[in-house]
Amino acid sequence: MDFTSIDVETANPDLSSICQIGVVQFRDGAIVHRWKSFVNPNDYFDPMNVSVHGINKSDVSDAPTFPQLASELNAYLTSSIVCHHTPFDRTALHAVYKLHGIPVPEVQWLDTARVVRRTWLDRSRSGYGLRPVANMLGISFNHHDAEEDARVAGEILLHAIAKSELSATEWLTRAYQTITSAGSNTSERHTRDGNPDGPLYGETAVFTGALSMSRRVAADMAAAAGCDVGSNVTKSTTLLVVGDQDVAQLAGQTKSSKHRKAEANIKDGQAIRILRETDFVQLLENAAAAT
View (cartoon, rainbow, N blue to C red):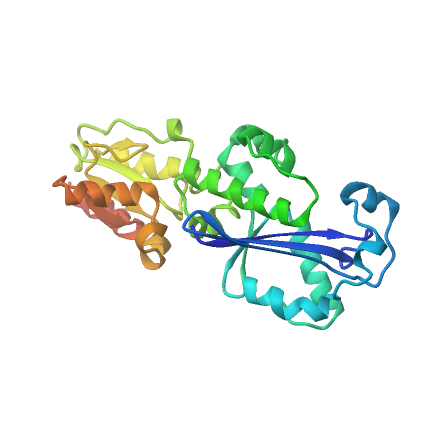
């Protein structure tokens, strides 16, 4: 659960007119560093923007310009998952880098509003703004302070990780799939009783990670082959199917909670086989061909 969260405030409707930046770094699910700076955009302050964030021209008169602080900002962002709530902060950052002819750092962007809409389906169409989600989760903060907003975006991601059992790395894929497609974690849609005539009858499968197919399709395939399908790893689980990219990229505590629980149960003597999705699909095909 290592990632960096960012938020910006702007002086006027031009998204490149950034007047404040806040960055919060998370490591192992905890805040390890905060950074905030006013920015002098050398631009006018629209009264509407000032009424939202309370920052005016006098506040930034002695602040660095964006080119003066870009290298410090880049040190926080480069080679990191960077989360932001809604697309505006990312767009503003790209705009200000472009305005000053500075290359945008290589990062993996993650929109936490998209994460919210796929984690809490009652928020999929509305109510996924920073304040209503923070209220839902009991997170208090001083809205429209860039550092505070960045912190809340990061804490929202931590809540989503805990609820969905997808890591920040897994959410890089899931957040940009359709709301009802691969990786949707609504467990009641994914539990199945296995076909008693199927070649894998007696197995109990659980899915985790970013799959190439929807969980519903994966559950249907497994059940047709005879597997009971569970939503969580239990004492009856015999197969844990993990998205291919998760097997290739994840290690240690960045594995999903289902993956970690399965490994712990294996150490305790439970017979669970962990398979990547591609191998599971091949297993189903081979089992079907043998009947």
